[in-house]
Image (cartoon, rainbow, N blue to C red; front, side):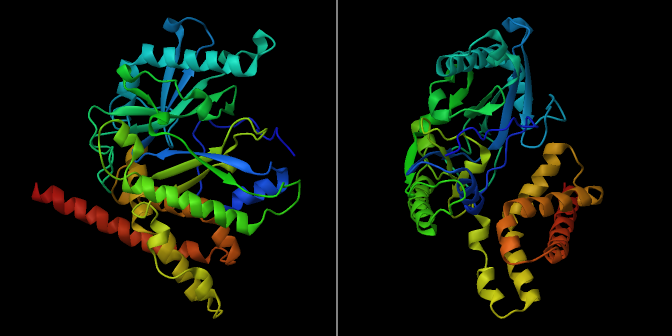
Length: 376
C-alpha cells in the first residue's frame, strides 16, 4: 500500500473539492488503501472561501507577514480588491493570526518530530484555509450562518511544509475572541469506506462506493436539515453539506485526490436538473446527449458562481467581462464534470452549447443591472 503520495503543491490556492467519487476511486486503485478506509467529515459552510498565508521565516511576530487569499486570488488587498472585507479583517487581527499559525506549527512539531532546523515548519509559508462567513457574504439559499454578525473566519484546513494536515489533529487551533473559529465546532462525522484491502492496481468495488455514499448522503441530509456548526453558535437553519477527508493514523496521505463533498438538495445544482445523460445516451442521439448534459451542468447556481467570480477578481460585470465569465463557467464544468464528459464521450461539443446558454444568462444579468441602475 502506498502512503507517501503527497507531492508538494505548485500553488498556494486551496485545491478544488469534487463531488464525483470516480477520481477518488481511481486514486485508490492506483495507490492502494487500508480496509476499511476511514473517512472524516466536517460541515461545509456556505460563505466565501478564504485563506491566510503566513510567513514566519524571519522570526518574531512583528516580522511575520499575513497575506489574505480568496478562492482564486493569491493576494487580496483592502479596498476595491478585497473579498467581503476579509483583507481588512486580516489586517485588524494580524497578531492573533500570527499567534494561531505559531500554535499550528507547535502542533506540527509534536506530531512530526523534525530532526533538525532544516525541517522547520516555518521554512515555508503556513496556510490557514477556511471559510469567511456571516452577514452579506451569501444572500441565498438561506443557511444558519448567513446572518452571523460580525463575520467569522472558520479554519477548515492547515498546510505546513507544503502538506495538508489532517484537520482533526488541529481541532483546538482557534481564537474565538478574535473571530478565528475552528470547523471542529460543528463536530466530526466518521464513515468507513468498507473495501476489501485494495492493493496497487486493484479496482475498488462499486458496491463499497455506493454504501459509503448512501451513508454520507444520509448524514448530509441531517446537516441540511439543521447545521451543527450554526447550532453550536446558537443559530438555527440549514447547512450546505459535508466535506470528507481521510481520517488520520491510517498511513494514508491527506491529498486532494481523496477529498470529497456531499451537498444538501438546495446546493447541489446537478441533482435538480432533468434526466440522467446516460438514459438519453441509449438512443444514440449525440445532440440529445449534449443537450441533457448541458441542461444539468450549466445550472443557475454555477452561473451565479461565475458572476461572483468576476466580483472576486475585480472584473467589471458588463459586456467587457463576458469572455472571462464564459471561460470560468466552461472551465468549472470541465473540471467538476470531467468524469461524466469522458463517460459520455462528449468531446468538445458541449462547450458550444454551454457558451450559448451562459452568454444568454450573462447578458440578461447585465441588462437587469442596467435597468436597476436606471430606476435608481
